[in-house]
Length: 119
Image 1 (tube, rainbow, N blue to C red):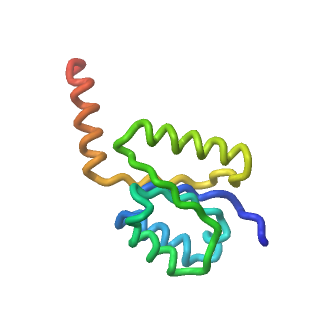
Image 2 (cartoon, rainbow, N blue to C red):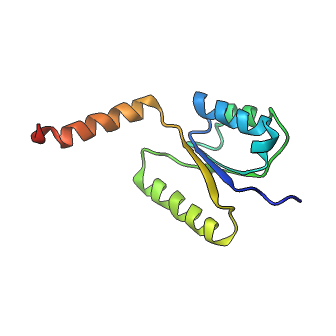
Image 3 (cartoon, helix red, strand yellow):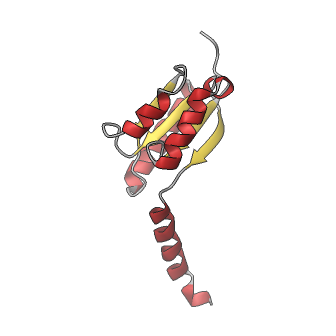
């Protein structure tokens, strides 16, 4: 078995943009040589992600459930990834964070409220 070139870490891999990125990774030989670490909100309801992976040769990957609305879940997943990096996971060479636009909008609204007193 060939050694992985590194890890590509994609959050939001089941969404429209995320699954398109996964499809590109799976379909290009130079990218599928990397280990894939993909997060989806619910691993049992990830049809778009599964379909995207089917567009190319099988490459080594893991799928992790990550709900970005739950801070405890984020911390738990981050701790697991840190342990994996120390033990066996190839070094992360590319991080693609695909957030739902509504999350981004909500984040920006919260941030703007936090700093409203400065303007």
